[in-house]
Image (tube, rainbow, N blue to C red; front, side):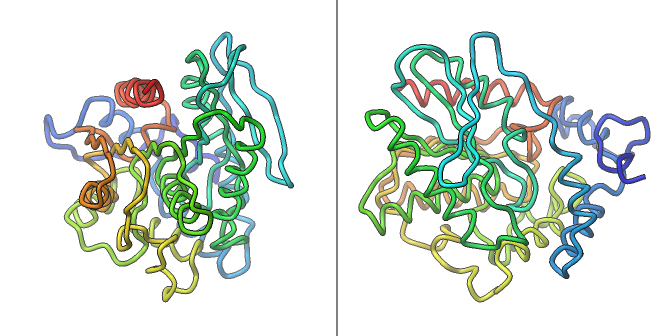
Length: 322
C-alpha cells in the first residue's frame, strides 16, 4: 500500500479540477499523476520521525532513490571527503568551473539520485564539472548539520580544484543551503563563492503569509503542511528560524555573488524566493531573476516537466559560461 501511494505514474491518481489554460499542459499531467494522499503520507512520516519513530520515513526515502544514467561522454566518480559522500560528474579535460549541487527535499528527503539528471546534463559542457553530495538529513541531524556538510563540500572542492570557479547550486531546501553556505563563508572566512544557481529556494522558515503560500498550499507538488513539517524537522527550535543561516531573506545580503534565481509560478515558495531576489538586488548583488510561468515546484528533479527542465538547463549553461 505504501508503494502505491509513494510511486509516481500509477493508474490510481488524484483527480484535480484545473481551470482551462491555468497550468502548462505538462504541469497538468504531472499534478494529475501524483498519487492521492502523497503529501499527507510524507507529512505523517516526518511527524512520526520527529516523535522518534522513523520507520515510515525510511520507506518514503527508499522509494525516492531512483537514479539517472548520465549522458554519453559524462563519467561519474563516487568519492568521500571526511565522511561526506560525493559524486563527481565530468567530461575529460580541464575543469574551469565546478558546480556544487545541493538537492532538495526539505532537508529531510532526497539524495544524490534526486539531482542526478540535472547534474549529468549540466556536466556535458566542456570544462564544467558538477558534484553532488549526500548531506545529513533531518530530523536525525537537525540544523546546522546540513549546512556544516555544505561548507565541508566547498572545502573539498577547493582542495580538489583550487583554480576552478566554484558555484553553489540547489533547488528548494538545497537552494537555502547554497545561500546559507555562501553567507557563512563570507562572514566567517571572508571568502566569496563565484556564483549561485537557485531553483525555487526556501528563503525563510518563518511564517509565510504571502499570496503564493495561501493560493498554492495544497495540490501543487509542495503542500504548505508538508513544508511546515520540513521546517519543524530541520530547525526544531522555532526561535532559531530567524537566524541568518536559516532564513537569509531577513538578513543583510550584501556581498553575495552573481546569482541565477528561478522561481515557479505555481509554488508556495514563489513569493519568498522572488522577495529574496529583490532584496539581493537592493543590496547590490548581480541577480538574474526568472519566473517560469505555468511551472510547479520540483520541476528540476521530477520527470515529465521537460519544458521547464530544459529551459533551466539552458539558463544554467549560459550562467556557467560567463
